[in-house]
Length: 569
Image 1 (cartoon, rainbow, N blue to C red):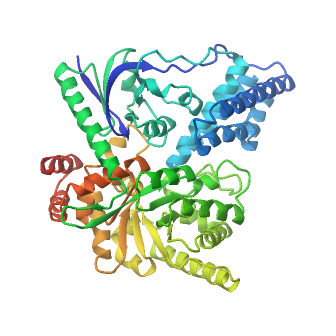
Image 2 (cartoon, one colour; image 1 turned 45 degrees about the horizontal axis):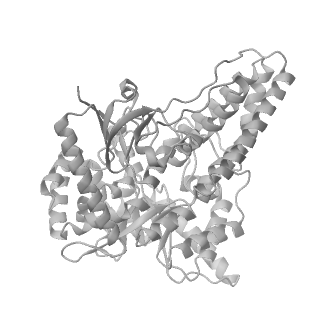
Image 3 (cartoon, rainbow, N blue to C red; image 1 turned 90 degrees about the vertical axis):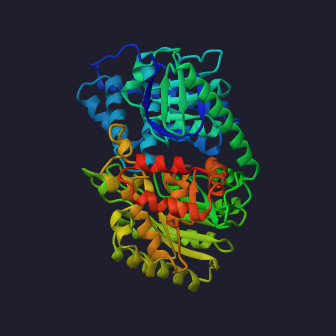
């Protein structure tokens, strides 16, 4: 009997095929008590050395297939093997009489749980790296079976979650789609799905466990749902939709480098969200008009000390060059929470979502912000550079930030450094208070970029990473749309622009509503650029504005989506 399970969309498309459960190879036995702390310490050290050798071999074997950023995942895992904080927790367990297996497992799980609790999806995804390297060491300590082998025919890969070293063992020629019980849009399965161009649905929850191996699955990566044992008519309709989707995608790819204009000639900038040099190259290839969000956190993670100013300059300049002179919007460092960077000591926080993060952390560590701004301004000479500050919630904060920025720029000029002539400074709108007071922020910024992921979860009090409530965090909720409209209305007629860099910008149903509300830039995952440009071209601005006005009057996001689908030209 057919049944539908709802999750979160992670990679668009439609797929139909048999389910294949990826069953993780776990240790077969666990010694609870250690005989002697020194002996257990030696056993753990040997297991860590074997794990490090395996990671090095894996990295070499995948060097031709993976990007430098993806290879860096396994380099970072090697560093995790000797993380001082992790090893301190292990030592405490060994001293209490635990076996090497138990000491290692407890420390790894505590470390991963701390990362999972952070608000930034990047850090949540890093929890998978910790568990991955943890399982590798544990198998050497306790023994365990080899990783499962894929069938010799195409399948829908189903898993509780997929770890980095597991995703690279899968044969991309046999993967029709990914479906996971947990995870999120930044999990490794989702990243691999987008790279392969196959559908993915994540965070389906415990109901996924009832899906048996081999069961026919229909996967809708756009709607974020799967159908188990679909009816013949549903299959027929899905196959027709899949053919149409493939045709539309091919057509969008063919004109991806052309501007995105509505049918009545209004240009909308379609930008890309990137977090690495490889992402920037992909964005350029896919036809992005600009980078609408460069996440700089990758420069600061998985290292014992902050990058030097020269290191930052080299990376920023390479990213700017990769875009061939197109504008690049750089977000300053956005970290924080109860698992700080090793060189940014912070006390644990009961609720990191509402704690010291973004600019709040930057104000506590002004030297780090100063160095980043210096590096950006020095690297940006000769390029169209946009700098924006995250997690701004008060006008006092943006006044301080703007004054701090001007001081850094003046000092660089006095030192004789060439500076960008095409430069803008803006802020992210992620907090409802900032959206509601947008007109008071305008004198201090050149643009607003709406981070709709956080704006939505703060507005609806729904953690978007928690499968139990993630369904509530729909950016098309009229309450969120009213906040967006408040921001665009404040900016109208001022010459200052408003963009959206959250996941909502890549939702094809949301595109006409956003541009109708007055959003001028949509920044999306690089692979989504062609489809979002195509979505803009389907509508006239008059139609989009009328649709947006209707959306603002609705009571729930379902009604908004229904109205858009009814009006689809």
